[in-house]
Structures are given as C-alpha cells and as structure tokens.
Image 1: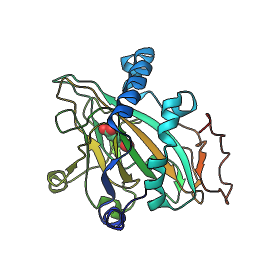
Image 2: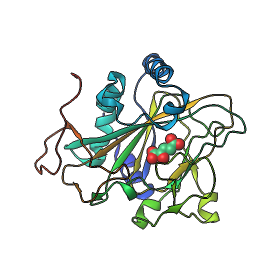
Image 3: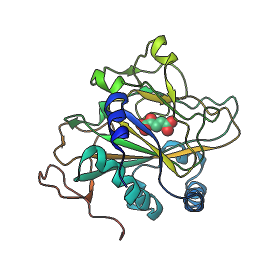
Image 4: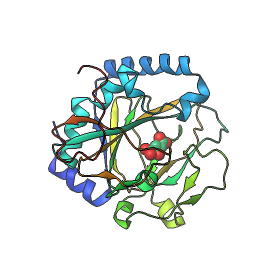
Length: 252
Ligand SMILES: O=C(O)CCC(=O)C(=O)O
C-alpha cells in the first residue's frame, strides 16, 4: 500500500513523512538480530558508520532495501521507476556522555547527482527516540535548494567528510524529532536539512538509510567517496541508461 494523498501533500510541504510501518514486531526483531550478528562480525567501530552498501553482501539489508512496503511508499513520491542508489547504517551506541552525532546537512550536496534529487528511507532497526539521538529535521528546508556546507568544528561528527550546514537558532528551535519504533521508517527529501544529537541513553540506536533516485537523474560528478554510484533497478524500468546498473544481488 502506498502513501495517502495527505501524506504525499505533507511530503511536498514539509519534506518528510513519518511514521510509516514496514514490518510487524516479530520481523523487526528478526532484522535486529541479523544486524546484531553483522555488527558483532564487523566490530563496534565499523558498525557505527562503516557499513556502506552492504545490500550487496548481506541479504537482510537487501531484503529491506527491496521491501515491497518500502517501495510502495517510495513509488507514491518518485513514481513507478526506482533505482536503489545506496544503503548506509547509522549506529550510535548507548553511551551517556558520548559525543557521536550527525551534523546538520542535506543528503544530496556531495552525491554528484544532476538534478540533485534523491529520497531517503530511514528504517528503524532499534527504537529511536529523543534520548537515544533520533534523527531531527528542519521542516520545509528542502524548499531552499542545495545549500553551501562547511566543515564542522565540533568533535564526533559521523559524516563522511565532516560536513555541516549552518542552521539558525530559530530553525534549531523548530526542529522535529523523528521518533520511530523499530520496524517503522521515515521518508525524507534529499534536500531536507537534518542531523542527530549524541545518544544519551544506554540503548543502541541503529537505523538503516536506504537512498533511492529516479532513472532520469545522472552522475554529474564523483560523490564524496570519490567514485560514481552503482544503483540497482528495484522497480519499473530504466529508460535513460545513465548508470552502469548492478544486478539484484539476491533473489527477491
Ligand atoms: O541516522 C542519523 O542519525 C542520521 C541519518 C542521516 O544523516 C541521513 O539519513 O543522511
């Protein structure tokens, strides 16, 4: 089932939709156990922000990135032709007094895409709330276009090149917390300004970000990882051929 008309118009106005149920609690627990096993194999340091594009190797990440409930909601916003651009785990372990955070930023700024358009699904592996550092967004900021980013001057920014966009105190005051029970997701526009504060609880807060684009978007420059994207067609058709697509890594 896709999004309601009301959700689609809220996305156009605010730049996000939340909460969207994806799987039942039993399945959410199974996905969390899959993540626990992956994190145990990779170690704490790598699991924070180092698990990039693991849908190619870890079947549970592929299952989520190609999940029909997620794609139905994404289709309501992007239309029938959908490319899976990337997946990336953002995991902040519970450490009261910890400093790992995500500075205010827009997703598309350093992705080298033209037009700079993308959509992120943030799937809650663990419950995410204010205390454990859930994502925060500035509603409507996607309407301001692509913004200049600088370098963060605080320690602990988990972003790849320590980027940060300046946000006024008024905007910070009206930021919205993305509180999500495990098994649910939010969707946000690639130009929405968002970030997250340190996890001040003793509970882990892990989320899987899943990035989608439409096939008319092309790679104009390298991304912040110094390379081009290798998307997977997850729904519909690619009539543009802008990317060297990867095959689906696992059967669906
Ligand atoms: O999980 C977070 O705290 C931030 C996620 C994020 O920045 C993103 O989706 O780009």
